[in-house]
Amino acid sequence: MINNIETTSKQTTTTNDWLNGILNTLGERKEYETKPALKLVENQLTVITVDFSKEFDKYEFDNEGKNVTKRIIPVIHNGECKTFWLNEKNPLFRLIIEKGIKGQTLFKVMQTGNKQTTKYVLVEDDPEQVSQPIKRERVW
Image (cartoon, rainbow, N blue to C red):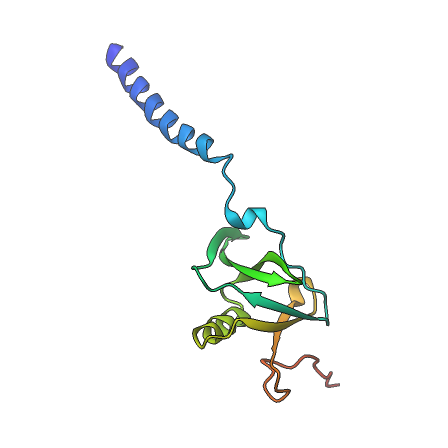
């Protein structure tokens, strides 16, 4: 019986250690939690400046059995620091990374669709170089 109490005491101590660790960090907010999220308006051009000075934070979660990783991109929009939450699998994420490697920081983004049909379009100054069609024609 005494051995059982000692084991339980050790387990309680170990459990309390990690629980206390979590409790101590609950009040700490990540930098991205203190900034408003960038809100894009459907079919409206949004100009942002991306801050590439440090690696983008990650937010991972399970969505109906699928692991999802969003990157939290620090941006400046209309003179205000905001965060742009973007799925790593979104083609726009790759485009931003590729252009960031080349030194580009200013981006013009347009959202088409909403909810499950949301798509992002990266608009270039040269109208010939749009990342994907802004509007799709219906074929009947």
